[in-house]
Amino acid sequence: MVAAMRVAFFGGSFNPPHVAHQLVALYVLETAAVDELWMVPCGRHPFDKALAPYQHRLRMCELAAAALGPRLKVSDIEDRLGGESHTLVTIKALRAEHPGHEFWLVVGADLEPELSLWHGAEELLRSVPRLVVGRGNSPGTTPLAMPALSSTDVRARLARGEPVTGLLPRAVESYIREQGLYG
Image (cartoon, rainbow, N blue to C red; front, side, top):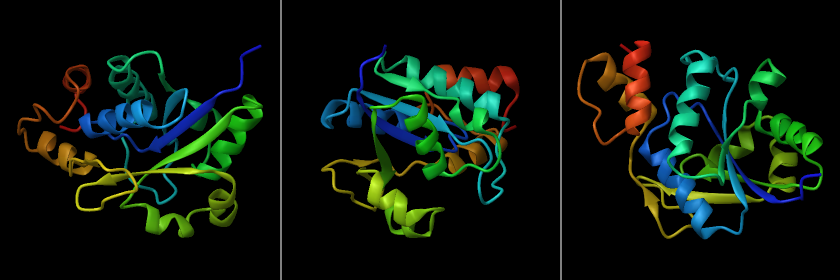
């Protein structure tokens, strides 16, 4: 039987995962009272956002996570659940799979004002503690703001054939090139 632990839930499109995602993960693992951080790529975006195929995003998350050690895991829960992705539904499913684990929601300060609009927002906000991380010009409750870097910008650079050196983990950049993604 696996012992109960405190897990930071880090959901996102991860389309693709970039170095700011890694910095958030490392920062949370090193400063918050959590045992692990789980990256959870969304299955189907609730607003029909165009995404690279799920298996590619999952693999890129695994490559990004590998650089940060065994406390950073990648979960395929949203693919297994199927359908539209909703954080509350996913966390309930994770709680059912891992009774006794305590899940904390990692959220960027830029998204925190939107949480009240999410599916099941009242229950989510009441039942899941949050770790708010600053992002770009949106300082969070942490003293560190992550670089103003977005997957949208990275995809646009890749589509234009521009360099992305320093924006993506090297393993993720290699995978994107090998698979011909975002070109």
